[in-house]
Image (tube, rainbow, N blue to C red; front, side):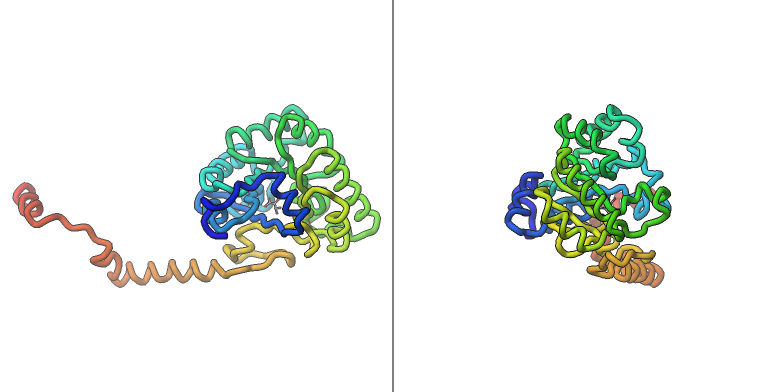
Length: 286
Ligand code: KIV
């Protein structure tokens, strides 16, 4: 659906209704105003200001260096661009792991200062009490289990999770606990499709997959991967829906050619003085 002014505002309840109706939920990341506006206009259900911004926008090797300040800066830009999509802000590393009061306060800042409609945080049973406290403060929480990039050093890389029966069963238990804890939706990252299918069927809340197969209630991708904005390594589970990088490179080459060959700015891009004013001007400056 193009043009956000005719679209209903997406809410957490709206996502649950979509799950019930068997309609797939769409979610993409955005980190700036124009991208948020574009996604909102095209009709993306959920815009995630992911801490992936550390890697795709700020040039870090992982998401760990991303701060609350970074998140707030990008959340504010996104919230000024989107009218109808549900906005979810990622809680960065160490903004919710140190203490529950600090977690509630930081979640509140993403809402009040960042303009988000919900927050997302990584982890299963070990985050249950934190999630309950944030939900009790009136803040919708999206869970995130499976591959959790903030724990990259604990797990020794960005490998898929839940490939053994024991680990898969633990992920299912975590999913159920997060639902009981009050999460309104759950991201499953990089787990076998069989496990994601079972979780999506068992849970009442929407399950949004990234590298978790087709059976999830919705899908999420990092916008730079989906639009081919980077030339760097892409995990197997992402798809380039368009090669923007090639398009952008061509645009820059066209600009260089035109400037270097004196073709830009042309008459169309040029402002003139009216002749009388110009005469006057020449007299004044000799
Ligand atoms: O930070 C992010 O972009 C994410 C998605 C990959 C789900 O958490």
